[in-house]
Length: 247
Image (tube, rainbow, N blue to C red; front, side):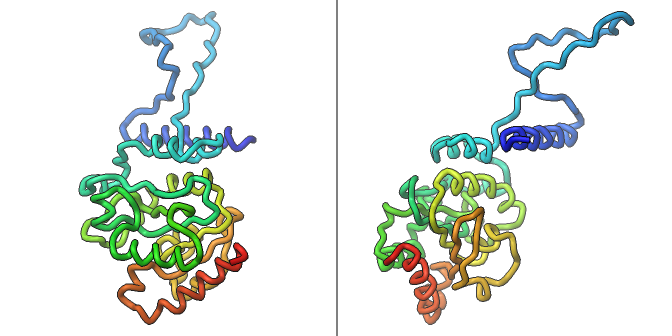
């Protein structure tokens, strides 16, 4: 079975599950088809062929067709897939080079990010910019995004259902960009991408793999602002990334 067929089948199962929760179980049909009123069919009638099923596009399916980040953003829409939508000012999708070889993935937007709609623009973002420049890159040459795209209230940790709702779009972003290396900033980015519950203190500094892409977990810049003594360890992690790029 092709990847496209698998994705369509998966989306159909999701659709049926949603309709069951709403008390119905009707397949999506071509909206151009005129549905006649239900009536008993004659005994001799030939069973009609089912109308084609129109699958709702998933972010993974969008990415699998060589889509762009703009198309993934369009699939996200005015997202209301979890409760974070009720308190956000705007969705913070991502920023940077859409063909970046290096991608940084953080946890979620903070207050400044929520205001500006750009990831990592607050105090932690300023530190991240310095880290990127110390690696001999620029913000414009890399791509920066978060696990969740809306600010958790009071900058609390994102909850499992919120991560689950956003994860397909993060995966699509990475599938579209196809970077050489991902730097996972902090516990939530590292654990989400690697699907582990190992503490960041044990994950950091060791090369891992995400979908065949080299991944380096390290401390989140916000943590480094609170614990400046840990900056040395984070810099060691980033130096490993630099070696991957011959820097």
